[in-house]
Each structure stands twice: as structure tokens, then as C-alpha cells.
Image (cartoon, rainbow, N blue to C red; front, top):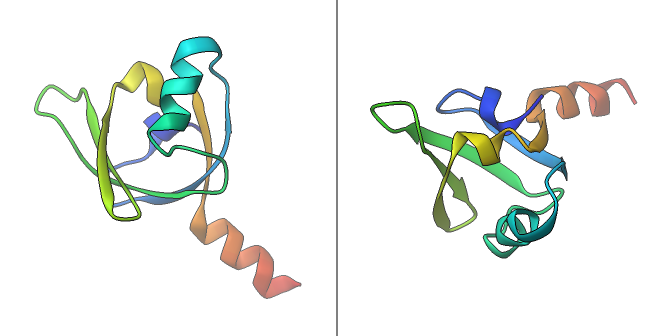
Length: 84
């Protein structure tokens, strides 16, 4: 599942990046690193870009870049830890 698939209000954990080069570095510089929890705040009127909340900062990201970020829902993590 990619960050692009998450609807506003959804909270996910970043698993990994599928991008390379300058785009990957830009995403890392913005704080979009593995294991970071991200909340999708909203999408723009024409559905691009999307606004994300990371800790105390908000970041806008193009949908094409959001497609390169693999995420996992937080609900799945809590369900897995309950069964352990």
C-alpha cells in the first residue's frame, strides 16, 4: 500500500521508499523516513497535492511522490501486537 492510497484522516507508518536519487533525498529531508508515523490531513481541491502531518510539522506532497512511499496502517500493527 502506498501513501497515495490513504484517505484524509488516515494514520500510517512509513515502511520504505521506492524512489531514488534526488526525489528520495528530498523526501528524507522532509522527514519522511522509515518508521515515521504520518497522518494525511487533506488533499487539495483538484486532489493534488496532499497535506501530511509529521510530528509537529505539516508537509505538502505531490501524489506522484506519495506513490513511491510504501506504508502500513497502524491498525494492522496493533492487531499483530495483540496476538503476540
